[in-house]
Length: 114
Length: 114
Figure 1 (tube, rainbow over the protein chains, first blue to last red):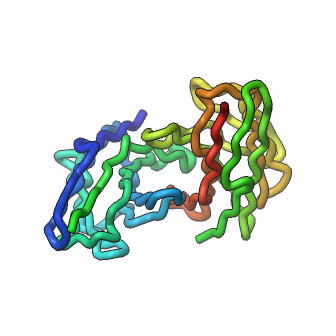
Figure 2: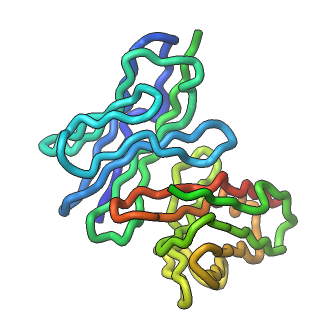
């Protein structure tokens, strides 16, 4: 079975500062990894995904994430955040043979302050 | 990608009643899933909605409480039966359109049980 741990439940940061949201996963088989964002009162939107190949993946809104197999991590980063990035961020994992079922982390609330 | 419409977007219900949530997709999809997001929590998979057969439920969820229909490849319903305040959650429909595990989500149905 797979599991996901997001190491920070809340991350406050000032506008234009860099941010890193941490995600660790556990799996005995190869996985696909995802980051989703949920703005207040909205559904989930895919930020980026790691399937294979380059370990550094770039997503929408200037976000990027790095897959580290040895550390089983998939941390999300942005060099300069905006007020509009304030949202809940979810890391998710699915195994190659899990029929598309995504397992989600507990979420990280990113709060960007002026 | 896929465009997913859910109805209702929100509702307030009385204890002991049942509510059916509809999910309509703009294209035929093989895999449809229902998730629950309790207040301040992450997403938990309720079941996989299988076209033409009974849904596959995750541990802790049963058909009597959450009956699911999937009459065709673009539509599904989730019923929350005999509701209690503990059922107050956002219920999200999601679909997988490719082979990479990526899910697309509806806006969610926010349910409050009094």
